Image (cartoon, rainbow, N blue to C red; front, side, top):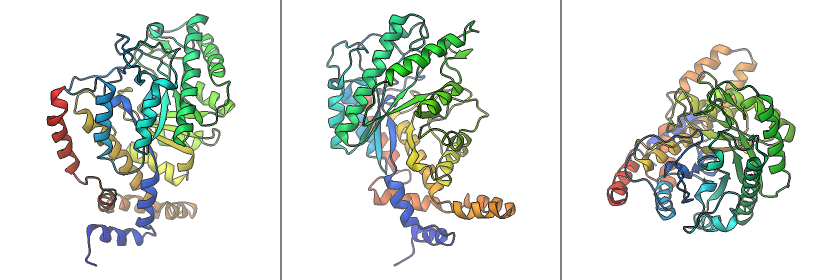
Length: 414
């Protein structure tokens, strides 16, 4: 057999004790959940007339935004055709198939998501789910599950209960547990007089939502440092949710854009997994604030994936994407971020972590640093190209040609 870039890379990694064939198999099986909201700027299909609000903002007006379920599914099919590996779809409650009816959020049911289940079944995709606590008149005050009005609070509790039941049915029908993640925008723009009360109410609301045990739904909660309209105080802070998850043994969601820019998300993984059963990762890119930029193949993303592999955490972590960019082609944004997340995972899987740990345990920090630096120039790109080839997906820059063709054929006519 003549030498190819892949066989060269295979030999190079074999010298480090890495079996690239095993890595390729493993890489193809690890699921990454794609966020549906990249395709339409987080607007959904409620037909409620409400604009995007509640601490969320999509910037840009690149043409071609999906405006119907049919268009969003068409765009998702295009994206999945460009992505090697195993994937899931992550839905928000505002993306139900409401058939033109106005269904309030305390009245949603599995009926409104059955067509999504069938769509995913046909494509061998798992589903994840999120109740939507934003862009609604009863969220306009900046409070939902922590609201001082018990009637408003009860409305949102019911929404959360229904979302869990929907997620459970999604998991049951597709034969793969659904991660249902709760994020709320509750907080204060300016300094609050009462920090304790809202957190007590949020704790009580969450307990009510999670009261019923469910077989194929996995509960997760997501913290935030600050957001639009909650610059001074966020009820669901990292400390609050960490304590809640430890005490209730729930899944903690760590979003890459929800911490201070100088914090290292990768360092939080081993710390939290000491005390919570699993974590949900929202792989994103914050720029000075939670701006949900497209994921890059950068050091923070690689560090997160390295930690998953080095700590042998892959079976306790759910990987999802969370960004929405309306300033560039949305199909390209989806594809760039998703491919970069899996590239970072590949780099981590190709690392001889056992050797690095041995150097560290022996006190040979010189060899540890030297090997870490040499790994940066190893031919991982050749292994990635082989992965794409075997998955029958475009390699190199070829995928962008398909995006441009799709833009001219489909997006330009919307």
